[in-house]
Image (cartoon, rainbow, N blue to C red; front, side, top):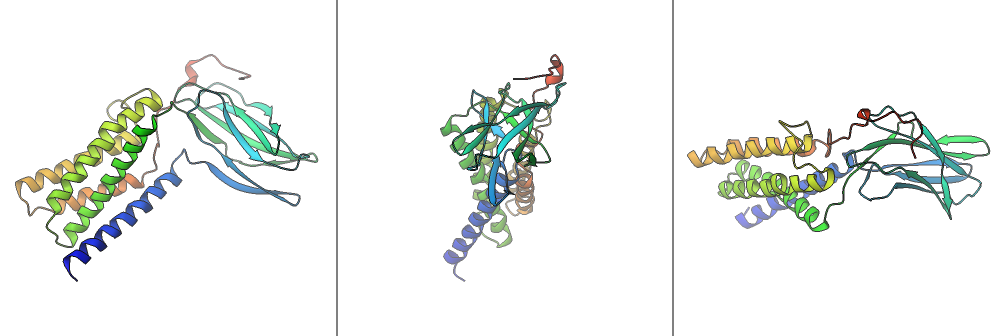
Length: 274
């Protein structure tokens, strides 16, 4: 196999692998909507329960239900609070039933359940309450650059590992590109995104337990070690494989786990929250 074809195939694999990890990250995170369907009578109703909201108003949970004989209700309660469950009817707007989850401070979480009702029979959509976390709005251009850079780090990390395994000559260069994109995407733009979202630049070690921040730090440390090892001896490429594996493990950890969370227990007990 000639070198150009070999390089193309390695880049192609690295790209497909990174795309797969990106989809995995999106679908396994705690902010990904809960989707499902339920059959009521002869009608199949599909629903999507949101789990994150960056608007300044109440979060709207909508379920498309053309059958006007079907009504809906929901109950909600703030997470880490002294609240009791509050019940409210869903409001119909055309073919949609709408639940309004009260807006809370940045990083505030509210758990909720949605029930549809027909002929006196109730159909609970989610036995396990969905949890929505409120956050601030992130400028689109910052978010786009953050995503591009962080997944570029994954792409070059994977390609660097393959370069070592297939005895290529660009391990040193690819390692540097990986580190630079990781720093810019995870340690520069990452905290900026965190600030817009939850009004704090860093909530990882030693100030908190946010896994998103902590895993970025761990990946950075291992790639620094890989660069130092190669700087001392260009033949010491094994650390690049170790760093690539560590970054892969980091990306396999769902995004936003153990993130910023508002503590409502410090507030007065609320029996009915509107």
